[in-house]
Amino acid sequence: MSAPRCAECGSPRLVRHRVLNSLTLAHIDCDAFYATVEKRDNPDIADKPVIIGGGKRGVVSAACYISRTYGVRSAMPMFKALALCPHAVVVRPDMAKYVRVGREVRQAMLTLTPLIEPLSIDEAFLDLSGTERLHGTIAAKTLAKFASTVQRNVGITVSVGLSVNKFLAKIASDLDKPRGFAAIDQEDARTLMADRPVGFIYGVGPASQEKLSQHGFRTIKDLQRADEVELMKQYGPEGRRLWRLARGIDDRKGWRRFFGGSAKKYRPVSRAAIFRDRPSR
Ligand SMILES: [Mg+2]
Image (cartoon, rainbow, N blue to C red):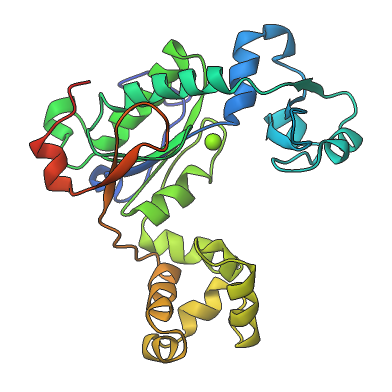
């Protein structure tokens, strides 16, 4: 008997989640972006460990998934990376090319929704709420189709995280990489995050982490057990933010709209403004 396949696209990978049909907030992240683009353009290195780096900065800009199995990581000094994986193929970064490919992916995202907030050249948040009629299906299926379209048309793979807010969508896209597709809700998030250090919460740097740890907050579980009012007394508005994010509550409402050109050219806009003034692209 053959394994069950998706009735829509024939994929053997099936994603189930009790609230899958209602989730619309996505984080899309290209897999090992620079390295994947280089492998796409040079099939000879497709099955080799590839490190992008060796430019002016002597650090790893990107490591493919094969080189990661040797312990190579982004931002690692090149000498250290090559000590871990001496037979790696080192490719100089070609930023102009990555920007071009990043734009192709973004153009494809714009066919899904005008509500896109780019975080960098290769990742963005997308709000697909209200697009079911336009696409004729739920957000999860639209996103699954998007991932295979990008693979076919651009030649690279992406990972999709689907959830109820930005913080959790970003956590989800990282769960199942590469070619990932994960959906989580607040309940999953609380369990998933419990044993992570408090520094897992965005905006909690080494200094805050140290301070929190002195007060007994080492893991997210410690924050989940804490009292909201006590945390607010101790840390002010940041205490409230930590209490909420530890429970997977993130009510960031703002969306920054991308205005073309350099990746830096975006400014905050309201959701209403985006729908009033739809991009022509
Ligand atoms: Mg990425």
